[in-house]
Image 1 (cartoon, rainbow, N blue to C red):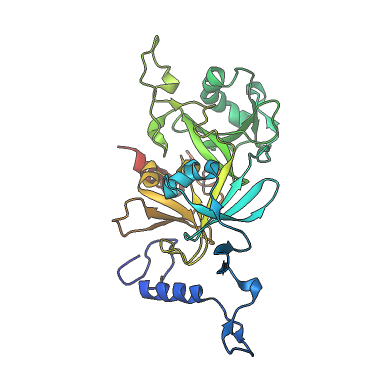
Image 2 (cartoon, rainbow, N blue to C red):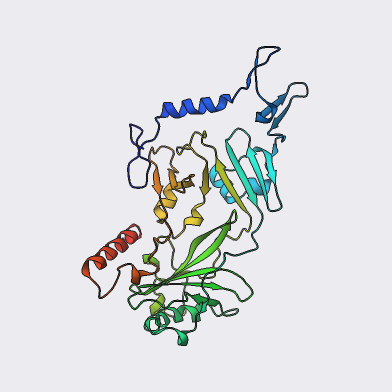
Amino acid sequence: AGAEGYARGPGMLHALPLAQDIEMLRVAAARGAASGPSEETGVLTVKDDDLTVELDAQVMQLTLRASHPQALPSDVAKSKDMLAIFGNVSMQACVLSQTEHRRVYQLVGRAHDVAHWSQDPKLPDSDLWRPYYPNELFPSEKVWIPALFEPLRRAYLTMPQPLELFLPDAPLPEDATVCYMTGKQPQQQGVWREFFLYRERRMVHVYRIESHGRRYYRSLEYASDARFCLAALQPDMEHRSHKWPAWERHGAGHPYAATHNDGKSCVVTRDWNCEENLSLGVETFIPARLLRGVLPEALLRAYRFWQDEADLLRGYPTDESRPDMITVSLRPGAHVVHAGTRGATPNGPAAPRAAAESQDLWCLRPCVA
């Protein structure tokens, strides 16, 4: 936001209220809605159903939305996401609701809610059903997919048992430069890993699927060429008994790696009247691991991202002395999965090809020296 209270840049709000306007809105919200003067006393009263905080002066007991404050359970307070936001501090909370797989807490005096979810036993449904067999690919796929993918599959995806891989039912176009595949273990149902094969750069990216609050996110775990990915993956620097294979000279990570293996999740939201919230709506915290490989690593380290009610990601600087804020819009279909139908054609018109190459270079610029 600029000095005049305006936000600039694509995807941002055209105008944001000034600081004094936000403060007035917060004060008005804190007053609450009175139902009118009592006929007996003439004092403004509020209905019991509208009460948020109740203090019993006789027993000196505080009640928050019909729930008594208690220490936040340690497994919630010590989770990675809670520590990233609040640090290692003790907090009081009230239980707002409880179901079979979720318990929602409201933190006392912090304008934050925490939904603690149990482990998700399911994986996201897959819409790919054509099994991957190198000898049964369409002609447009045989010319480049096996040569690019088979070395990785034989090195990583056959033990302890072969990974089941699936492709889109329709054949890839002749000029396709990217192939999307999914993988799962034989006993699983759904998508366990996602694979992106890049024809021009001769590399493969592997994403792990993580359930966070019963919503699914992809996180980059492996790149056969770490120079061209948005995550700061570090190739193995240990002593080797043989040379690097040519196809993985700059590879990093492992397709089966799990940088986060806690099945439970804490979804943290903050109210619009929270001082740090500039969206004037409820914001949901998005941990950096859920954006690994999707946003540049430099942004994930410099900003803490919250998702507003319009599904925009708002990046607030981790350095509190910085006054800036960024917004990120992630749109379905923005990835060049079906590059053959998006103009990135090796033998097509020069203008669409140049535009695609320019966009590709822009995406890779943050991670290429």
